[in-house]
Image (cartoon, rainbow, N blue to C red; front, top):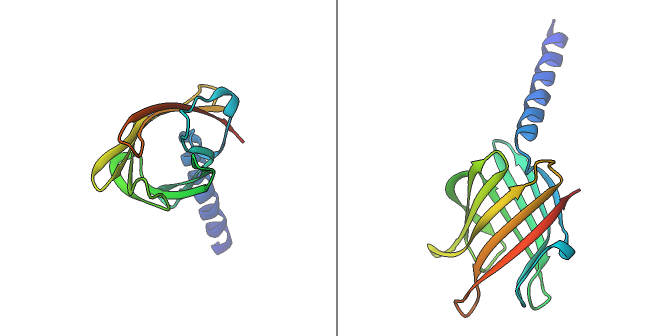
Length: 154
């Protein structure tokens, strides 16, 4: 009887995890498609973005290259609930907020010391294979720049 209960519990656990992942099209590894993307000169390019479940939260890991060629890496763990959660590893912002707009679109805001430094939208294509990130970012001189990054799901 105990063995049946353990097996049943494991099946329920794995099924629940599968449903959570299936309900969130962001989950997975996304690679930048530079040919389809448009960046202003000197902009940071996030080459790989990984969304994964971390318990009830979502963890986002970003790796890329800054405008000066140096490597960038940051991590964020939280929910897509419109509340700010801490970002580690990125000197340009200390908090990131994701808000779910619909099943395939997120709003994103980055702040530093409570001031908005970037905002945009993340949209997953209906086929789930591409992700388009349209952002406005304040550069070091305080000028707002726009970029469009297109990612392919791996």
